[in-house]
Image (cartoon, rainbow, N blue to C red; front, side, top):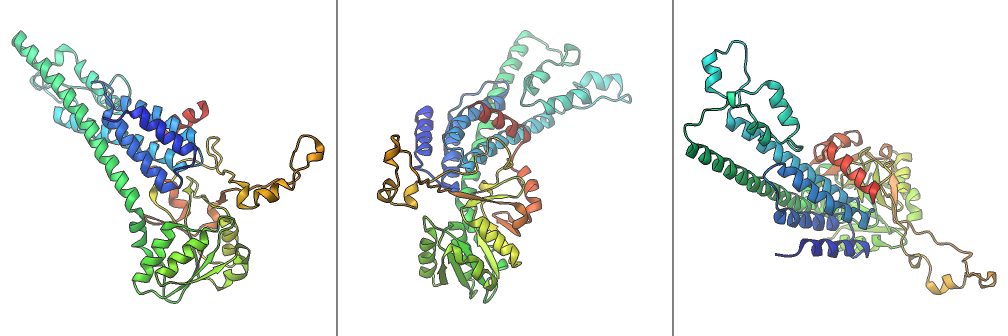
Length: 417
């Protein structure tokens, strides 16, 4: 079996050195690593979900600190924590049903009370609320007073019952790990197929003879546009080149290879051309809890131009990009600076140094941010692998994927790093 810490260190180094970039790649690698952590984690008989959560948090702190800009890493960590809680709750609910715990009432006769172990409604509710915190539900059930327990006929019967309880604990432990791993496998599959699921909705949003504008390169956008083309939609695409990395040139070549009519424009020409456009379709780096978007640099300018001319601004993104944090959260790093060489040649940059000052400080500074922030009021529609959603609905959608307790844990972890 591979050494988990070695795998964690290897992934951390790749994140730090930017050898793995992009939301989908980082999300998939994170989910696969956490699956390995879960499969090799030895968990105790009691508070099993808590042990898994502690293990995931320990690894998650290292991954988030390695590259805080890749918000998809934190998203997947929180998703896995939510999966553990949900699977443990499901098993606990099933265990309560199997044990046939009934709530006593004043109408019950004494014989009925003697025949069946009875827990109060308050005890059952407390057990459900504290399934992830000691004392566990199993401990609660084992601590039922002797007066409510079925009498033992012999010591050998007691030993048999003890062995049965131990076997039940071991079985539940294996069941929890199995169910969590299966759910993580489904998550990995969803990440891998999100482009196809989003592309299936293209024909509902792109109509005949429309003009679509996008900026830079997004695989999700490319698959979305090509899916509409395959459905016999005839339309034209304007691609803003996305300086200074010019990823729009790459996208334009890919669209032309798929027989799509494509026009490349400069970023500064967006406002001049936006009046001819029917819809703006762009990708995203992350979608925040308030419906704001962290996107490639230049997209805020496009969004403002679209709003000025009443052009719908549509964001396509997989559900792994849904971030449960807000832009104002202190642990959210919205941007990072890329190399100045994207803008200036190193030879040109060295000519701008002031060697006469003695310390060689440059007179010219180059700022090359990677991302923009687009506020929710500039977004018309989000299209995810679960369908189309208004910006005001995003916080409800995000609540389905994350637990409030996990947000607090990760917030504290990020503050301690």
